[in-house]
Amino acid sequence: MSTFKERWHKETSSFHLLVGEVTITFDDVASLLHLPITGAFMSFKPLHVDDVVFLLVELLEVSSKEARAETVQCHGAYVRLSWLRDIYRSKCDAAQWTVVGRTYLLHLVGCTLFANKSVTNIHVIFLDAFCDLTQSGSYAWEGAAPMYMYENLNDASKGTARQL
Image 1: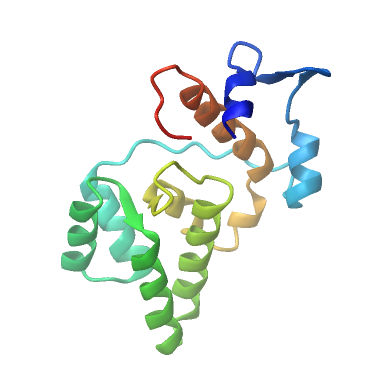
Image 2: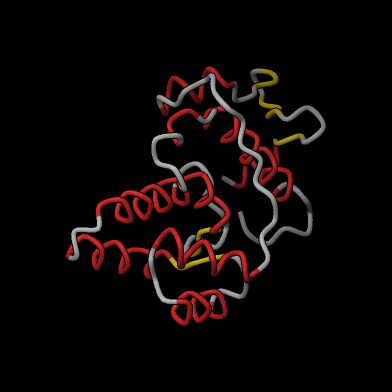
């Protein structure tokens, strides 16, 4: 990973390797992850903690107190993977399948497409894409994934970065 980090050039969004300049294309992402290439583009706006609590209460059907405690523990608009897994289990037991679906999808995108350096937290902003589960398949996930990855590679390639 550190070798890739050293060879990443944010100016061209590509790796400069001995064999030449290489980049990850939308076609690569579509082929590897089987994500839709076409669809509506998602625009995620920064969330205030109150908005995060509202999303968690409305879409994951947790109590306001529980949602606020989780955001305090995670220091912002994040939830822990372990907390999300607990919600998933409890909603499965209660047969609340729509909430189970949202919880699973948030976990999935937070661990794959939009993983971050913390490895334990997921940004709640992605939950907004699962308000209407019938619409979530129409988003251009394939376009968002490389852009998110490029942004994180740009941060990791800085000399001051201590973590990948």
